Image (cartoon, rainbow over all chains, first blue to last red; front, side, top):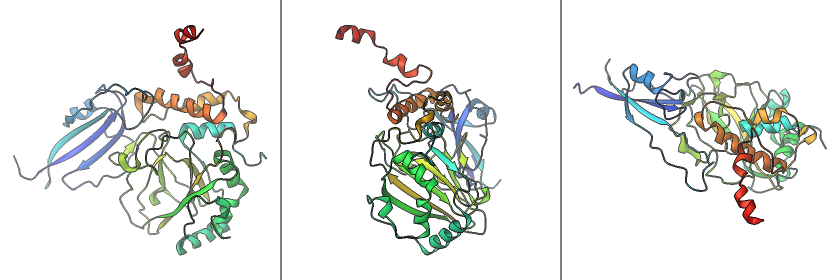
Length: 94
Length: 268
């Protein structure tokens, strides 16, 4: 393995737990240092779904766990529930 | 007094989106005076003072005495709001990174709500940023920048606007300052106000039964995916608080859950 490989992370938030469901929010963090992603930079997601990103070579490294609502908090909303973290390894010198 | 009060459709839009905007509301000469005042700095007043005693007679005080601004304020937080704090927010010229997404509060469990004015005293094209809002985010219980991992959402809405534009937002709205790729410093004046009365029917309610209200409250902003029904339930609860109508519903969402015949039978 090249020592120049660095991790890129793509975080996709889905409509539902179905990995084929629509991306509704997204973030990217680039360990190669080439891209300095920031808030509000794009209006359209880079992929339509997690499976769409997998087909382009992204590897899913974390699934969201699902928990039943705590009693008394059934209608409380907070963070986005269906967060999938994906990675690619890229040569930082490419 | 109904001059310049919000109407019910505007209040429903506030309940659904968490903010409202008025483009080029403040006159040009007053915008220019406020720009000069912001460059000099605007000292903060003491939190919890009545708004009308917060500032000396300066251009920024004149903005918030405008009848249009008074009508917005009165409709949302009543006739005698308290000054919470203000800030002159700036983004330096050439700043390429946006601010992290955040809400201006720790977790706030009240149904009562504060408002925040966002006043853009000079033109703010997209390359200058503008504040980015996330419509419909204001009921989400998060603490300030706990949402900083997020970068983009479907439906995120930048305040791209002419000088004199004013937005007013629920305290819980998610927002962030955007990069400023121009050669000029960007300014935005923000003011938070607290209510001193129950926030029930403070606006012009002559159109309270407008059939469009349910449709507005049922707006789907897209970014919360499958949780859209929970968002609508929270808006229904908020609308009941705002109107005092405890049987108000949209698409039968709460009525269905409140139908507990076994409890009523036991009570009888």
